[in-house]
Length: 260
Image 1 (cartoon, rainbow, N blue to C red):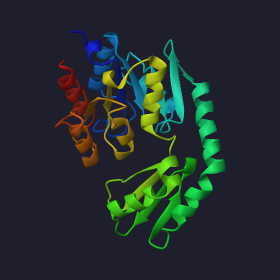
Image 2: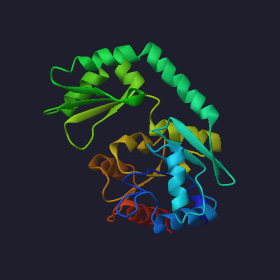
Image 3: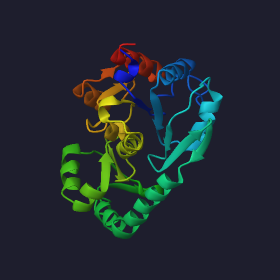
Image 4: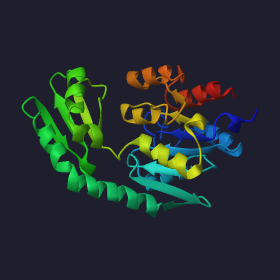
């Protein structure tokens, strides 16, 4: 059986997944580079999905022993997409235009309502607005179930944002709906004609959870340092959690899952 009978697309996160545990931080460890080159030589396409801009990712690839390149280098949590032609990086203008149109729509139609909803919590917690309309609410103590119910009771929050709970147990992060790694993976799959059944995702953080829905990927792995919520989700979906950390764990878990 060929490896492409099991997986056709491998999507990997950067911080805490592809990177970590080795110095310098700005290059893929040799074992990960070798794994990516191996699956690439067998016909598997690989992609990145991270907060790092594609141009910065390109610097990482060039600093590594990596011979192959991703079919898509997704950056800024889905806002940008890099394409490689003869190992030279180009930004996908069509992708950028589509994401910009979503951002303009969010700004005009939904941003005010989102801000007003979140402002209601400023007596209990500290509200911070970051670039690209990302918000954080930090509380002295947070009731996750209560916040989830309250957020889901607001139509604009439920339909036009998504929210995650970092491991500090005191914060909730709110993102515009289009800044979803899951959406980015779906767009890659559509462009390549690859289904979730043949998509493998490697990740570690709560902002990666949207990639772990079964309609996005059915093959899933994580290193030992992954967030407990990520581990729980992957175990529920029949994935593999390594006992090793960072990229070493990713390579070990992926090889076991694929029978390599």
